[in-house]
Length: 107
Length: 114
Image (cartoon, rainbow over all chains, first blue to last red; front, side, top):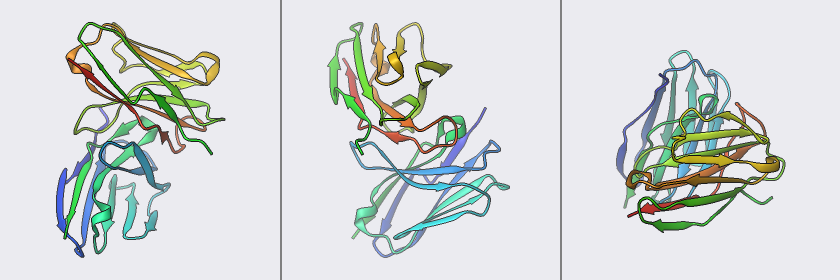
C-alpha cells in the first residue's frame, strides 16, 4: 500500500529560526506537491516538484525532491508568524496526501 | 478566474439523516475529485471523475455514499444515512486533466453528525 509519511507532525518554532519538514513516500512517483492549509480554510498549492533534483523557492520556503530516495523536504528559513499553518505533501499520481505538519511560529 | 465553488459551507445533521454537497469546478477542468478530511488528518480521496465518468471510487463507502457529475461539470456528493464517523470536511477539487496536474481545492463543507 502506498504510504506518504511526513515528519514531524507538529512543529513549534521561534521566529527567525530555520527548520525542515520531511516527506517520505513509497511509490515511484516522479513528482511531488506541497500544499498549505490555514485553520478552517482549504488547501492552497505551494510547490510542484516535477523531477529528481527539483528545487523550488518562494519567499522563506524552499522545497526539494529526491526521487531516488523517495524524499521531499520543505525548508523554512528565518520563520515568521505568517508561516503558521499546516503543510501537506502529496503524491497526486496516486491521490495520496501525507498527514500534515502543523507548524506554529512563536514570537 | 473563478475557483472551485462548494456549498453549503457548514451542515449539522443527526445520525441516520441524509445530506448532499454541491461542487462547481473551475471552468474547463475535466477532472473532479471529492475528498474527506477528518480533523487532524490529510485529505482522503473518495471519488474521482473524468468528465462525467467515474475513474476511481475504490474508497467510497458505497452503502451510504453516492456521487454524480451530470454533464461533466457540477457534482453532488450524498450521504444516506449519515453516521457519527462521517463528521469531517468534504473537499472538492478539480484539475485540467487526470494524473499529473495541480489540483485546485474548494473551501470545503464542514459536516457535523450528532
